[in-house]
Structure formats: C-alpha cells, structure tokens
Length: 386
Ligand SMILES: C[S@@+](CC[C@H](N)C(=O)[O-])C[C@H]1O[C@@H](n2cnc3c(N)ncnc32)[C@H](O)[C@@H]1O
Image (cartoon, rainbow, N blue to C red; front, side, top):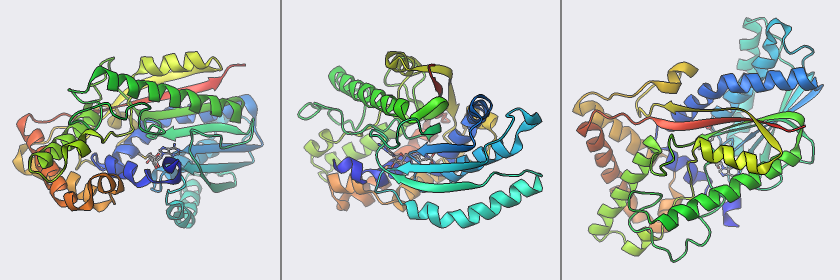
C-alpha cells in the first residue's frame, strides 16, 4: 500500500508540528528513560548477550532516535555497581521507519554523534562498547527481523499511528471532524478502535517472533487518561483546532464540505486499560511496567527538562503577547515542514489560509482560559513469557 512507501511519513512530522515537535517527543523520551534503563539492565543481567541487538521502531529523521541510542550506550557503559555483570562486547542498533523516511539525515549525523558520545563517555570515565548503527526501512506492522533476533525493542511516539485509515470508514460520515471529535458518530469511533486493536495486535505478534526469549520491549505512545475516547488532552485540542480551521475554510467556500468530511487522520490514542487488554489477549507477553504521564504542551517551552519535569508540570501561558507568540510558533512550525497530507487532500492553495486561521484559533484558545494542555503519554514495558 502507498502507506508503507512513505506517503504518510512527512505527514506524521507535520501533524506533530501542532505541538512543539522536537521538544514534545524529546520530553517523552526523557520521561521514559528510567524504564528503558531498567529494561537494558535486565536484558544484560538475564541474558549476558555478547552481541546485543537493539531496534528503535518509528525512529524518524531527527535527533531523538540518537538520544535513545546514546542513552542505551551510556547505560551499558555505566554498568552501575557492576549490576549488569559482564557487559555486551558490542551493540548493533537497527533504526526503523517507513521507506519514505529521511534516513540520510540520521546517517549524516552519525559522525558528529560518535564524537560527542565518545567525548561524553570519556569525560565520565566510561568505556562504551563498540556499536554499529543501521537503517531499517519498512512498516513495523510487517516482519522486520529474522526469528529470535532482537534483545530490546524500543518505540517512542509512533505506535498511535494506524497502518491505514480505519477499515470500512468509506462512505460513513464523520462530519466536520478530522479525527475522533465531539460530534463523531459512535460507529466511526468504533472503527478507529477496531483498527487500533488490529494493528497493535499485529505489531505484538510480529515482535514476539523476532525478540529473543528474555528480551524486552519499551513502547511509548500518545494515549488517553480515561475511558472517554475524547480525552486525549492536548492531542484532542490540537486536532479540534485544526478541524475548526478547516470548517472555517468550508464556510468561506475555500474547501468543499465533502473533502473535509472524508478526511480522517489515521491515529488513535489508547488508554492504559485498552493496552493491557490487547497484551493479555496476545498471551505471549507479560507487562513488567505500564505508566501514564502527562507532558506539558508549551509551544515555546524548553526541551531539556529532566524526566520528572517532563512528566507533570502544567503549562501556563501568561498574557496576550505570550499567547500570540505560542500561536505563531505552532503555525510557523506547521509551515516549516512540508504538508503533503493536507495539500494532497485539499490542494496547496488552502495552506496559507489554513495555517493563519489555525494560529489565530490556537492563540484565542490559550488567551481565553490560561491554557493548560498536557498531553497524555503511555509507556509500556513488556517481556515474553517463558
Ligand atoms: C511522531 S514521529 C516519532 C519519531 C521519533 N520516535 C521521536 O521520538 O522523535 C512518528 C514516526 O513513526 C513513523 N511511523 C509511523 N507508522 C510507521 C510504521 N507503520 N512503520 C514504521 N514507522 C512508522 C513515522 O514515519 C514517524 O517518523
């Protein structure tokens, strides 16, 4: 399908520009860091792999995947109090994304990454094991590795993306919404849920074949903090504002209503209970940890918070000027990234207007109620049953 050949790849990045893209995802990686460290230590103590294989699924092309790689190398290099015993002698990293991903950008960053990792480790008296980084194009909803091959699977902010639009949605109206909105019919919500169940179950089934016995998975994704499907915090807010922007363009005859009604983002934010149930149904995995945290959604916020800071601090944007700046930041970052999804569905001519309207709505939304827009994120740590 077109999906698996990268049509959507830039769209993911673009939609996430609705939030402060890099910083939001970076905060998720920082917040999940203790869980990742724990999983790596366990793999090392339980299995003592000589050559350790680690894969980051949905790596994208930015610095975040290298942040994960660096954390993994440092964890193994640190070996605190010799807790992981004999360390792996080498590590191989497979960075996976859809074929349309800009892997070159990662590859071109590797030399500098190596220099800074070596410097960082040396300054702390650490001996990082030799490591090798490989790009792995392909959908994580398909098989990516031979059987019993991978010691640690990691994925951050990628698994909420569905493999396709919800099945059987064609012809069913989700009027004026682009996702699960307040006025979305229950049947459409059900189809979204069914697609997520199908995709996530398939993902687990594939990874269970590829992971070595005793290996681990740490999966972080956008989620919800209640059973209410319309409760994904900042995620819901951003999609609502984008769909309001599109409705305005329909009212001004810039967009055909049918075009808006037939546009659905292939994304689903699960709850903790939904994830638990899907893991139980899979029957081959134990949940070693599952936690929900909220990341603040400040578009002008810094990106270097600690895990603790990243997890909870609410955002308060004071005053009209700050609100306008936040709206502009969002709009600018939206414009800075190519927008193939919106352009290919609605045509390029609407882009200027849509982003301007979106920025205004975002600003108004913040101004009207000293906005708090935390984004719920779930980290799930899994281990194959013996
Ligand atoms: C929001 S980005 C997250 C990137 C990165 N993990 C980070 O934390 O910055 C989501 C990534 O998932 C990738 N993705 C979505 N569906 C995928 C699939 N079926 N297989 C592989 N990658 C996928 C997208 O191409 C995109 O690069």
